[in-house]
Length: 375
Image 1 (cartoon, rainbow, N blue to C red):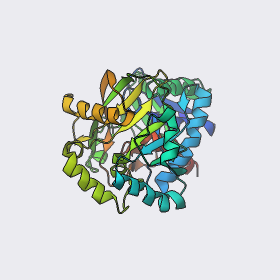
Image 2 (cartoon, rainbow, N blue to C red):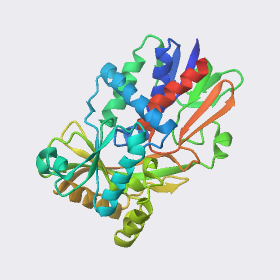
Image 3 (cartoon, helix red, strand yellow):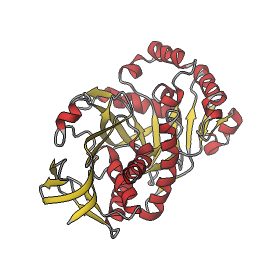
Image 4 (cartoon, rainbow, N blue to C red):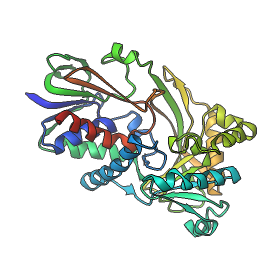
């Protein structure tokens, strides 16, 4: 049987391409090497973020992905938190930074954010965050529990009449001329193949990918239980995150904030730690993360990093936290652009996310690529 579209990899990028193609009525073959996705798409915060995206294409993708996530949640039936995000300023520099953002890009571009006052913050969660004087409220951020949401999307998409799913199927060769895929479960043929295999840079088109000098980012994450349970419904940042996300690049307070971190908390800079927190449907919170860039992912965790992340989270929440689970996230990183797309032939497109925003922008990217192919 010949398919219109073959998609290699069933993480969020692969699912997004398969979903967009299926909506257009194309016959889709979705191939996943494992029984279920186990890579970056389930090891993350489940944070579909608009607020941090760079102006232009990435911000547009964040906004469009917001809409697609709502479609997916309705169709696949997984939990989604839709209250948005809260970015708390921890000091005067961060307060000034948030004000500068809202006087510039936050006002002029579709970030859908507002600046909360000290009084506004006191009304959040019965005053739990009253130590902060300023915060940004992003209204479009959504949070899903990735380890449940991604399998739910996969199950729903695979049930569509024009989608065929093959799990436990490793694709080890793609004939870029004939469109034939050679796999551990036999051969298949497709008019066009999208390679969405994450940070696997060796199995398919290794020579083409190596020209990009790909790097992998390893991050440490934890799932914690608050000592004083409360129903968190927002994704949480602090001003530290402004040093990490492109939406804030170029603001006059960025360099003074970086210098402050270097002076007062140099380990946060050394380990590239900035605090993110997202709720799970079960009253727990996912916290992280750090950033360690290498060509190979090492299996060993650094307990000092976990301690620093927990300390930041406890300071922000004003209570102690019990760690119930620890793991390593991993994703492709360090590209000149956040997304790299290679076309070895007119029958093959390789899609590489080069930063940790696949959940935030992947749904729109899949739609863009399918529309471009049809055009």
